[in-house]
Length: 505
Image 1 (cartoon, rainbow, N blue to C red):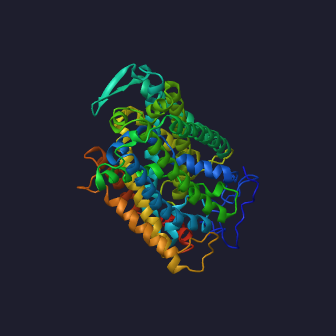
Image 2: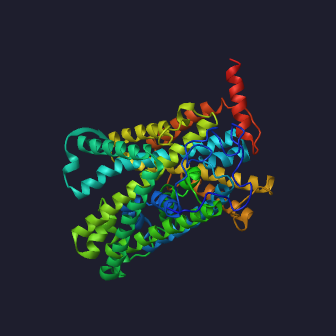
Image 3: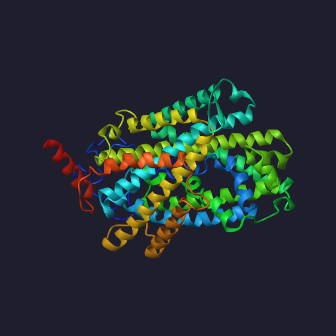
């Protein structure tokens, strides 16, 4: 962890006043020694921040979905799609980078949209991203037993319970997924410091597994195996691009945990952009090395394509198992990061009175939003009950909502650049308006891929049911919000109006 102080590079960069009227203290509590004005502990340094974001983006999809991507677009085509997807996410990331440096508060996009667009814009961004985070956490709870099934053949099939979408759910899968969910929730509940240490260790192991795959490609890979380099044309590229929001979501965990970072705010913005570049490089590497190991048909026939590719490169099943363990590390880093991000976002919504105050309570000892963590953890416990089909449903349902949040952030970025040109911006995105417009247009393009008639349209009924049920509940809550004009003190005025209405009942 870095010893750099959490001080802005220029005066006044600490953001807008919170509901209490004290700058940067949304809860009005000073917290224990070492805590920020909002009660969170400021303990995350440079390495922690980079590990948090990179680990969040490198989950388990690169183990499971590689064969689908290469079959759809070819090895080089899939790699190129990730380059293009990385550019899209980097542009969105640049808008986040400027905003997190200007408003470094737990909750990230919630505060950006509240200041730029008002309560309904903030609710839209936050509610969409919460589902995105929950979908990733639930995804990991299902993926853990799937991973162990590769390492321990047959062990995860014991005790048939029921069948979901032609997939047999076993008692062993459910037990492992539930236990893993309980452990990960517990690690986060007891504090950001143990969660940060866990993240760093797991990321280092993940990187070691990746290095072994690159070395294997250099020794045992073949350029001929990569043929055909391109397949499927533009629709094939869309198959890969539609997964980009789900696979790259994670850089935005940095804004969510901003209240716990002890770095100059300009550096926080830069680290966010660096993390996106690192994730794009990782996915490109996986597509090329896996393609050099096995042909598209062999990769498609594999449940864990990257692991089988690793085994082929080294001609050793043990090396395939090593990559699976690396994938398990990536799964846990992603899980850990999104528990952090989702709980902080629910905390911010509770501070603004958009969701029940129960979500906004910090644990008096651990200084974590414990209730929000327990809520997300409870949902992740339910996911293993649905088995492997839940993996696909969550990728798409979560992905479309993540894109919605990106669109709102891009709009907020452009609005604040126009309305508040003098706002303190310790990190200032070069060619800001052009970057904001590009991020908005490209995010809208990603959103279009999920619409009916498109190659990656949401599947009826399950994916639409997940998205529809979430937004029916969200719209009901949004309708109760009072109309408050956007601005630097929008949260303070919103809370005051909601409290006034409550007293008048």
